[in-house]
Length: 145
Ligand code: DQA
Image 1 (cartoon, rainbow, N blue to C red):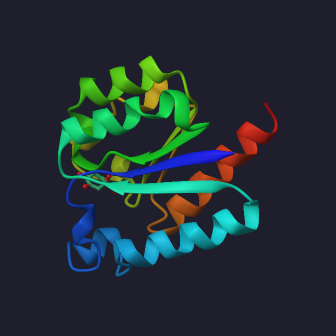
Image 2: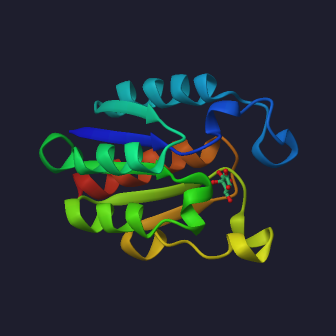
């Protein structure tokens, strides 16, 4: 089983960026935790971060033949990107959306996610642990499908 893990814009700045909201873990710390969990779950993962919407769309498109599922933190594109949503629909792979912060407890413009309705589920508000919970949920879903 192979899972594509995507980090959206500004997540490369984790650890220094708004640590009160996103925690002190760097993206590298999160990726190390995900790699450890992937070994335990016996799944392969590929991790990709981009600040560019078009690169993220292309990476999602690559899931058609190469991946069984997608774990994504679309970051600010959550609230703006019909293109990312359309890409998820097009590839027909189960997708889990994660957020470090609880987007529903923040500004109103963050309450809408264009992607959530086309994902199998969303995990929001557990800082770096959202990714761990998200990967577990996705793998569990795929193993029981
Ligand atoms: C975020 C929440 C988004 O609203 C924000 O734009 C981010 C990070 C989160 O993980 O909490 O960049 O996706």
